[in-house]
Image 1: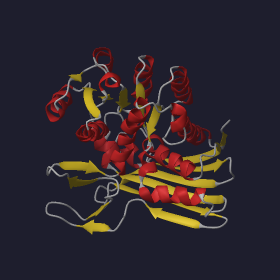
Image 2: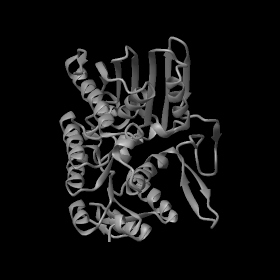
Image 3: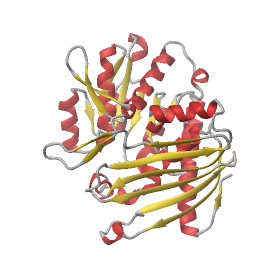
Image 4: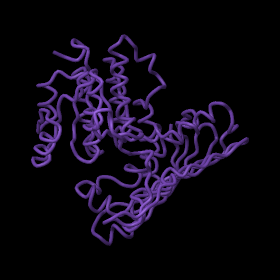
Length: 363
């Protein structure tokens, strides 16, 4: 029996790694509402598959196709390496299931357009997990813009930098298929565009450097700087790297600044005032806005923060649709396939600009 029949939305997850575990934990927590069921997982890695089976007590499949064919699902989230998103998401949509894809939607504009077209044809919800939109500081920036408190945005700066262990250890199996553009840049490309009311990207000029990772036998950029002009005339510079020393006090260093004709808003998206050094750990700053824990009335630890809120938003959208809501009513209220395309357009243009050494116009 599907969720549409028994009043519960049944959700499957493809990919049980670092990000996939967050998807699984979010939907497992939401089961307490009685309206959401974490129904199944597809995971290729044998050891991880068994680990997640025991951890979440759900059916686990090696192939996403087997999961889609065997389970009656209302929606599926895709939390695999970037270059694997397209084929899986197409399979989900082809079977008539709503889909959320971890950013980026795809690593090609052609792939993004295929997904957008298929979702529109069905019609189905196609959502992208741009979790920076769910940070309350960023929400306040956007609301201030919509209220006219910035005036017209003229320029800005956004940065997101990771410790070296991310490409060397956490993502080593596929870091050479990625770069700071794809793993980090698309977050900030989407964030700046969303805050400004979603203007189209127009021109991208980017430069990059290859030193540290190259010396370690990893063929991908250390850092990328992208200067993006949008259709509203705003010029935003994005700096992304993943070679900060592992001794740095936070895994991620991130923030955004926008300056308009009438106002300025700066947000240090990492350091929110929590700093310490606990037993067995180095000096750290905590971004507790993104992830924190709290206990419910049954004394169970639950996952909280905007990292999980963005995933939970997919389930909330499915419930809205189940309760006779429409895709048209949701338009503009979630990160859509069109938003995913815009971020990928910037990323592809940045890669092309680095190769050619010239600005790239986006049409």
